[in-house]
Every structure is written in structure tokens, then in C-alpha cells.
Image (cartoon, rainbow, N blue to C red; front, side):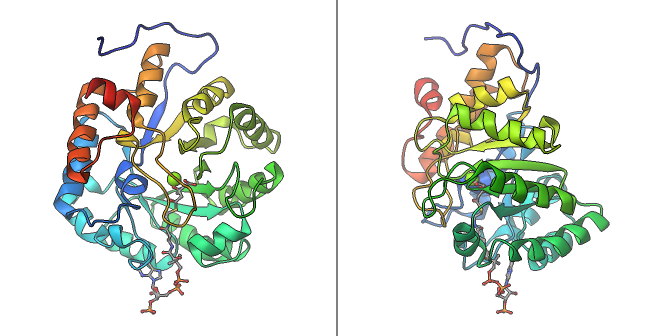
Length: 307
Ligand code: HMG
Ligand code: MG
């Protein structure tokens, strides 16, 4: 058994990508049993030590909506100065206040491409979500805080079914117009396929949003995540969200399961000779350690093969 794939580059792909690690936030937010804050801090430290360039740490959402992340402030305090450059999710001004009090420098707002998910996830309408984000983003930028924006349900919605590409582009553009520097396109329930990824990225391009401003965020519910990453690579996208060990799922999205596992993404990138800076054995050891804490094996094929 080999610990690394043979490197065989494919033409026309980016030389380097940024992995945006969401395991400590998207990965853990759906866990029912409360995980001790110290374990979360250790998870974040280990992810950073494994070479992940961006590690989203937690969410400053309403604690009743996501009880698992109610300890967000305690976690960031435990992480101290080293945590100040880690992004956190913030839905509104109350969340921003909490992040600013701790001196955090990167936030992410998260919008919905559909009416139903805006109601379920944000207690808002599609239009009103922008009224919630606008002052949040404006104040964040004025405070020197960088803002990423997510769009959920870009490839399908469990209540509404198909989501028109133009609707996703309109929501994404409105978020970028608020001042977000990067837009992460979320396949919240993992239904997207490769041609759809290509078409969505092209539609953003036609609307004037280049690949340098886009990231892709895949859940692996239907086993399409890596195939979708390849479509993204061919389209020139250089930022991919992934979750260590394939943890994850959104508590407010029916049938959302684990995110694309970071290890599986790393294996693909290694095979293609695409630079990412992550140490695979350290990451596998981290996911194996976390799986022990959670009491179940990691769903990542690469963690199972190497762990
Ligand atoms: P709401 O109940 O409508 O809030 O929730 P509200 O503005 O009416 O306020 C009600 C009370 O909550 C007030 O307190 C507020 O202060 C308090 P009271 O005056 O009654 O004492 N409150 C807060 N407290 C702490 N932190 C806050 C906060 N906001 C209000 N930030 C809200 C609206 C947006 C807050 C709620 O719907 C919420 O927290 N939603 C978050 C849901 C969530 O976290 N979902 C998972 C993340 S999204 C995701 O996973 C998808 C993604 O991965 C991409 C993909 O896969 O597609 C990103
Ligand atoms: Mg997600």
C-alpha cells in the first residue's frame, strides 16, 4: 500500500489551489453530542499544523439554532492570538459584534439561493437576507475585517427541487455587490454533477464574476464531490472548501450529509501534481483522532485507506 498517489499532471489545470477547511464549523455543527471546547481547539490547532492555509473555526450564530457551536467565543478565546486570523460564520450584526469583541479579522456571511432555505436557515425571506447582511458587511469592512460570502442550495434544494442558474447568479452577485471578497458556491445537499458545475461557473463568468472570486463548496451526499472538483479545476477555480475526515452537514437542510473530505481532495490534487501545502499523514492522523472522539469511523475513503 502506498501513502501517496503517483503524480501524473493533466493539462490545463491550475498549478496551485487553496483548500478552505470547514471541518471545525460545517463538520461539527451537526453533531448532536456536545464536543468539549478544548477538543475543538485541539482539532483547529492540528488542522493548522497540518498545513491547511485557511481553517474556518466556528459560527457566531444564535446558540439555540446551532447548540454545538454555542461555545464559539470560548473557543476563540482558547485559541488566543493564533485564532484571530481564522474565519468564522456571522449571519447578522449581533454575530458581528461578538466577533469584533474578540478582535477577529475574517468573517463569512451565508445567504440562500432559495426562498425556502432562507426561511429555514436564517428565519428570513430571500430579499430580507440582504437587508440583514448589508449593514453586517458594511460594518465589518469599515472595521478592516475581510468578508467571504456563501450561497447555499446552488445546485438544488430539498424543498424546491431544481434551482435556476440565473437565480443563483443573481443572489451571488448581490452578495458580492455588498463587498464580499470571495463567493463560495455551496452544493448544500450534494446533488450537483459536473456539467452543472461548468454551467454555473460559466454563467457567473458571463455576468462578470471571474473564477478568481469564486470558491466551490461540495457536500458528498451522492458521491459527486470529487468529480465536481475536477469540473471546477477545468474551469479554473482555485479555492475548494473541504472538511477533514468528511465530517459535516447542515442542521437546517434535509438530506445534507458530509462535506467533501479534505483527505480525498488532497489525494486527487497530489495525483494531479497540484500544489496545496497540506501534509496528508498529519491530516489523516487528525481525522482518525477526531473520529475516535465522535465514536464512529470517518466516511473519507482516503482516511479509511491510510488511517
Ligand atoms: P432569529 O431568531 O430570527 O433572530 O434568528 P432575531 O434577529 O429575531 O433575534 C432573536 C434573538 O436572538 C435576539 O435575542 C437576538 O439578540 C438573538 P433577544 O433580544 O430575544 O434576547 N440573536 C443572536 N444571539 C447570538 N448570536 C447571534 C444572534 N442573532 C440574533 N448571531 C438568525 C435569525 C440568523 C440569528 C438564526 O436564524 C441563525 O442563527 N441561523 C443560523 C443557522 C446556521 O448556522 N446554519 C448552518 C450554517 S449555514 C451552512 O451550513 C451552509 C454552508 O455550509 C454552505 C452550504 O453548504 O451550502 C455555509
Ligand atoms: Mg456546507
